[in-house]
Structures are given as structure tokens and as C-alpha cells.
Length: 335
Ligand SMILES: NC(=O)c1ccc[n+]([C@@H]2O[C@H](COP(=O)([O-])OP(=O)(O)OC[C@H]3O[C@@H](n4cnc5c(N)ncnc54)[C@H](OP(=O)(O)O)[C@@H]3O)[C@@H](O)[C@H]2O)c1
Image (cartoon, rainbow, N blue to C red; front, side):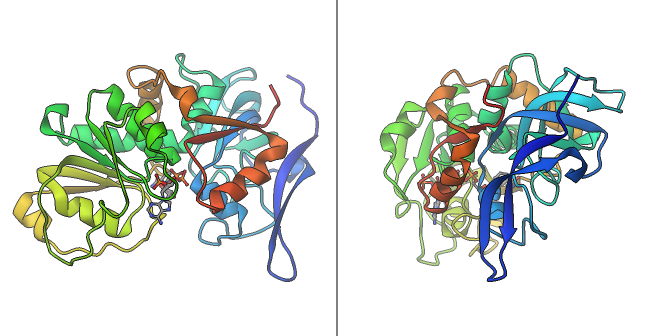
């Protein structure tokens, strides 16, 4: 398979005034880090971590100039690994992609073959990026909750940050699987959207947040998928039913967890941390298979905004204003 040596990539640069600028520049394959697989990127997507990397967050990206993009789907153009050959359709997410390794906001990536997942037969490259890291994380969260024994007949599941990428896909997978879903929505009123993707009810951030300091509150939920942290996560732990399960993956509201031990020792509540980045490959591949089959959402397009590569900068800014909804995919190859 032939490939050009030069390609376009979004480059984030730190100026002498310690500001961060972003623009699409020409790079060469030699600029890419080492790896045994080169992929021509067709689609990438926008996640909260990409926003952080694109705006100079050193907790995500240590060194600039840098090309973000923690998600990529595309076609292998070169491989010295026996598991992959030119022409293979693949997904690359997590590990260090887009953090300190040039990511999916470039037309080509070079990565270790251990990061590469063959595209499951039930998904297109475009659909894989509608899910992306957000969908993968939502699926892991639901999986861990189900594995811990939470069934639809036990009651409703609370989902916070529900209009966001992880939240929207969690709402959809749960609704598709027969769970009653109550979505927390607050930054911008999106009740209509949330009901269209499967929420039975929508509550405000205020209703989902208790700051009274009481150690436990009336039970309301069989489980909770939290994507925001802080008081909302603490409140869901205090309001989940005895033996209920809460998963925690994000910190958009806060990294704090104001809580004591009582929900755990008096109600047997389980809190499960979700880390998609270091998820072992066998579970990773199984989760992608699940997203391509039983959990494939029929209404994926309702969640999706597609943007051309040139509009990526504007989409990053929108996320910074808290106005991002559902999943934004970036058509890197213009296919
Ligand atoms: N652990 C992992 O492996 C993993 C993987 C992926 C993502 N994450 C994390 O998960 C979180 C969500 O990611 P995402 O990609 O879904 O982000 P996103 O698309 O930006 O969505 C975040 C949502 O959170 C809500 N929100 C924003 N500010 C809030 C606040 N101050 N209080 C309460 N809710 C607020 C908004 O929903 P409403 O308007 O509906 O309230 C927003 O749509 C991030 O912290 C991200 O880093 C973790």
C-alpha cells in the first residue's frame, strides 16, 4: 500500500507567553513516534481528555508541540507485526495515544501493535468512532455494573453527565438492555434529546446533589453510572439501594468525593472505578465485540455530530464552553 511521506495534523504549540495555539500543519512520517504499525486515520473523535490535551493540560500531555486525539479508526498502511497487514481496518484508542504519543488528529499515526484492535465485523470505521473512548468507557461501566448483579427489575439507573459522550452512550446501552434510566442534566437543558436516546426521566443537577452532609439518604436507584465526580457522585452513593452498584469514571464536576463509610458498611454499596486506558486487551476486544453486537445502538446517529478536519478547532472550543452534546466525530480523511 502506498502512502505519502507528508500529511496534515493538528498541532498544539505553547507560545513564549505560555498560551496554547492550535493549527493544522504539515508533518512527515519521520516525525511520528516509533511503532510497528502505521495507520491511515479515517475518523477520530472528541473526548474531554482531547479538550484537556488541546488546551495545554500537563496532567494529560507533558510536552508541546503535540498532536492530540485519543481515538482513531482507519486502515493499516504498513506493519512489521505479524498480527496486522496493509488493508486491515482497525481501531486504536487509549494507552498513550493522543496523550504523549501523536494522536488521531493527524492523517497518519504510528503505534505499537499491542494498542491495535481489529475492527469488529458489526461496525464501520465511522461507527467505531461514534463510540470511541467515550462509548468504550460507557460499555465498561455498564458491564461492570451488570457483572455485579444489577438487573432491570431492581429499579432505575442514574446516569450523570448524561448529555456528554460517556453519558449519552451509557443511557443508550442501558435503555436498549431494558433498564429504566434517569438522566442528570444541567449545564444546558437537553431533556428532549435525553428522552429520545432512551432516558425514562430527567432530573436537574440540583435534584441529584445533596450537600446536607447527612451520611445516607433515602434509597432511589438500583445503580448509578457517574461521569462527573464530586457531590453528584457522593449523593448517588448515598441514594443507591442496599447492595446497589455505582461506577465512577470522570471528574468534570470535581475530583473530590465528600463521603464517609456508612453507605458501604450499612448498605453494602459497591463503588467500581473505571479505567479505560489500561483495560487489558482481552477485555478491550470483548467490549468492542459487544458494542458491535448485543449493545449496538440503533439510534447512534441521534448522538452524532460529524465535523470535517478543518472544523476541529471550533468543536474543541465548544467543549470548553460546556456546550458539547453526545459524540462528535472528526472526518480526518474526508471520506
Ligand atoms: N476513566 C476513564 O477511562 C474515562 C474514559 C473516558 C472519559 N472519562 C471521563 O469521563 C468524563 C466525561 O467525559 P465525556 O467525554 O463524556 O465528556 P463530555 O462529553 O464533555 O460530557 C460531560 C458532561 O458532564 C456534564 N457536566 C459538565 N460540567 C458539569 C458540572 N460542573 N457538574 C455536573 N455535570 C457537568 C455535562 O452534561 P449535562 O449538561 O447533561 O449535565 C456534559 O455534557 C470526563 O471527566 C472524562 O475525563 C474517563
